[in-house]
Length: 63
Image (cartoon, rainbow, N blue to C red):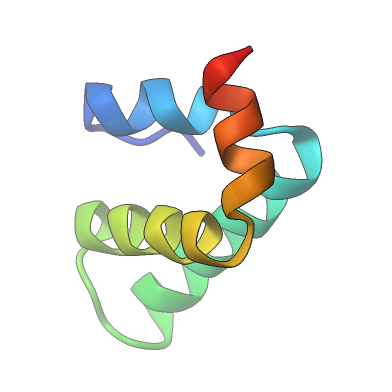
């Protein structure tokens, strides 16, 4: 899954494989189980990954 928002797509592309899978799973849960739109689900999922794995996400952004 690739986010339709280009800024979010750029941020997600910098996640390592494990965090990408986590983001993808959370986005799917938020979209299908919580009933959010796909765009909102993807954005919120990224925020959850960032909140829970700040150091690793920041390392990806700075490398």
